[in-house]
Image (spheres, rainbow, N blue to C red):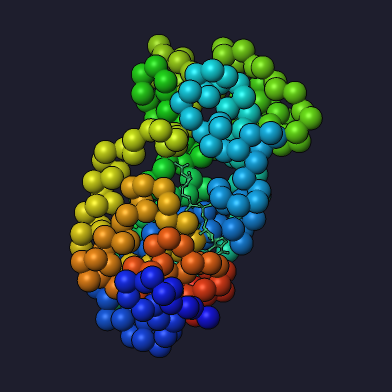
Length: 279
Ligand code: OAD
């Protein structure tokens, strides 16, 4: 089970009974989640195998520069990810988190999910109090007027139908901009983009403020399936730990942040969370 790194600031514990006692006493839990929580639903994580689409890594395409250069290619990539997500279901980890929130609510306690994921699987699982730090695959934002809206259509536009195959040999579709997804605001019609945070972009200020407010008041934090290397999310849990808030990490492997946390539960979160969060 969990180990303690020799360099750890504190000795990590994998004492489930002790963690569960703290969970029973907690007034406000924040679950900070990353791609790993969706791994057992078949959604590829960012780091590690499976992070490629055609010859590109997500980090090559999920940038404003890539979109400006070739919006057709970036839309093909996101169209593919949207279509794939329509076939995925929440796993036992998402469900354990949603059930725990429901129980907390019925007991007059608070539970918040702060996720870096854009896949909406926490919603599908039944979680209600969710902050999406990096946006959502199923929202679009106009590059001209800034209007945001939910768009779950499949395909998102006719020209993207049957496009986006991940096969390396498939040529780019080179769809003209006027056939890519457009803003539906009256008199606008501008090109829309996925409403997600791209590499090199700042997080939405309002979203960040909401997340900070939740972190300021929580008394127990779960860090689930994140490599804890992308800022600002990577600093949230270490900061809580340094203020004395109990942090429990659930991951298949140790991360750069593990040594700062009180508890570490090793294994797929679809297996570790249900027993850790059960009533
Ligand atoms: P990563 O892909 O960086 O890390 C996934 C983490 O999940 C790793 O620490 C794995 O060990 C762990 N993991 C894998 N399978 C797991 C399982 N079944 N159960 C538990 N843990 C598991 O994903 P994130 O940390 O979410 O940002 O990445 C953070 C951000 O980096 C993403 O939101 C994205 C990316 O750049 C943007 O797109 C802005």
